[in-house]
Amino acid sequence: IILYERTWNTEIAAGNYLVTNSEAARSFLVRWAQYEKEIPPGFSSADNGAIHLHLIRSVNLEPEKNGTCGQKYYSLTEPVTNLGELNVQGMIFCNELCQIC
Image (cartoon, rainbow, N blue to C red; front, side, top):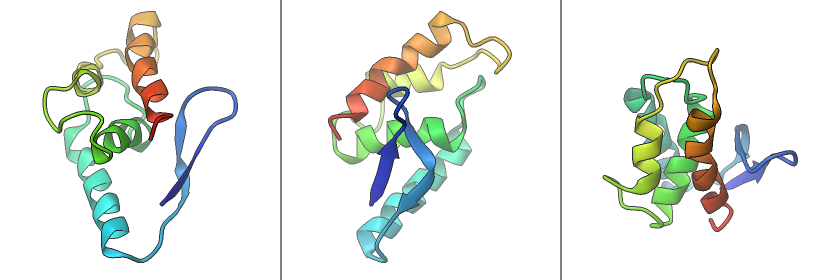
């Protein structure tokens, strides 16, 4: 699985990726797609937001439930028109943690 980090911030991009046709890769993609059913009420950038949490969980840096990044992700409540510091700052830590992945 090959993903890339944007050059201007710590965000991992979800728009382009390369995967091998293997059971592990297909499982990764299916589990990532399941986040569609768990979108928080606020702006989360859909698949782009979910990939950060999914990566952290996939490499066991955070448990599936009740981890810091999961709590931050699921508590996003602000709409896209109000991306204040509190909303954005909450996920920056998780983006930076993904750099370890």
